[in-house]
Length: 478
Image 1 (cartoon, rainbow, N blue to C red):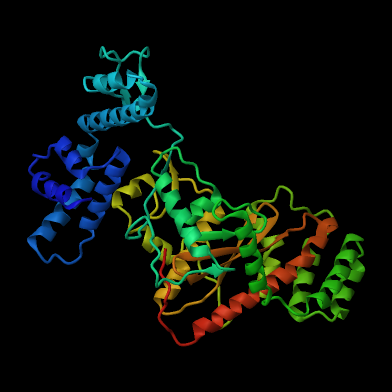
Image 2: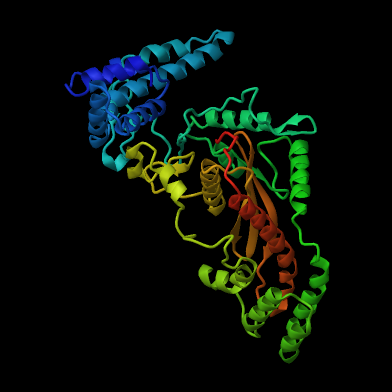
């Protein structure tokens, strides 16, 4: 919000002399959504002033709290809604006039003129508190009514806690270059254009577009990118695969054959031979532990169909996770069922009024006046991972990789996130495997060992980096 508009609020809000039309004109916003975002952002800034150095700081904090407690009612009054409705009509008419001027149409002039004398009706709560324009005779009947209410399925895209919504790459910034192509520039430019498009309430983002708002670049070879050109995206995915292939276990082929033999016996229902086969194999102790667990789970008659999610995870994946990632001095598990501390801290920085609407302090997609519904676990977990990387870097570490697993039915996808260049958080799908449905389907476990072995090596390298001496991060966050 510009200085003039801020000074006007400070001078007039408490003494009830605020002229809402004069304020909107000073503010100079093009639509109501932008105006309210600015009002709520400046309120949050004032409320969060910690050191009151001057009487003006005291006034800002006091007025900010008052505006928040009153739920910004003065800025949502009938007069305010009428102002924004009229401005929308005039702007629409001007656009029509500009387009029509080439073919000498004059109907836009009439629309501009008539909008100056229209009156407006505020709908009752049963109408969801939206507004409807009356016809030129002041009638509120359905005939001749032109609606300007937002659609009930309209999306709002919230601003982040960044200092500004758009990001400008500077010459000295660390950029991701691949085969002379500037990935960072392409990604940030696309991301900035999406930010601008989100000012329209009907913008419906694709998955990777929504992630890009948070500076997260999704890299999934099974996915068509809406962010990077196809040829560049494919080359990037190949490059990432080659990078992470160095973490693969070198003895995959050796134990894959013996795991296959275990699966063959289990599908043939030779339970009396399975246990002996495992004991006599040359497999490592922790792989034998996994196979014994699966042998006791995938008995004849067992099927994952109709299992609830927690049971499916326990039976299908915990058997792998415990041996591959046992608690040790390098890493351990903690509160994974709750939002991490870093994400909670970031969420609390948003305008406090948004807490009433269950809106989070990042670029989140929400449905107006309805409880927030995430696009999916992938969006949620990627934001948690980004917050974790930011926290790690604030502690003085850099070039750390963090991993996660996302379940969808019987499918499990594994991801790795890194922050090696300014503003760009790569979110690479490292692999995918499927949970066996029953003992006839047990061969699905064969690739799991390779994927989790690779994932473990990535985790171990990050653990080693975190055990070393701290050093300041050099990368800018998104």
